[in-house]
Length: 134
Image 1 (cartoon, rainbow, N blue to C red):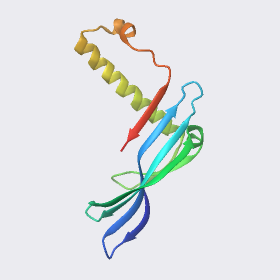
Image 2: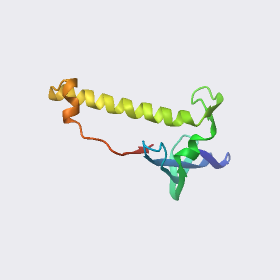
Image 3: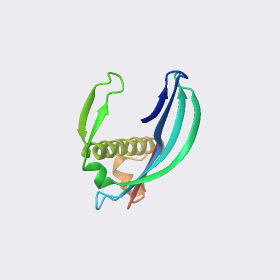
Image 4: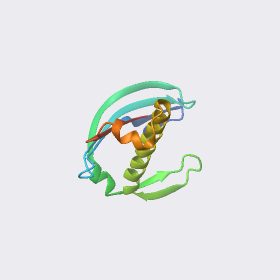
């Protein structure tokens, strides 16, 4: 979140957030569009939301996001580190694989399918579109 303004007098903070990020990844080119849906959010010091306003949608390309480095802050310690952009895609892919595997394993158990029969019952995936919401 990017802080736009802060008022110690009123105990408020105004930030730009992207609560919805759309990713259209092509496994063939390892690229595609990303859309960041931005809102302006005003909160009190206790975290209560006073106002939320839609600001707009900003586009980017996966290849551009992966080509740079990012300064990230640990959520507990506040320690900062610089990480390469390729880790972003690697972590999204790992999370996607985990969610898929966990859901397929659960479905297999519920239906009594054996792993060997899984390919027969799975739909063929030709394109992956992921939407992440915060």
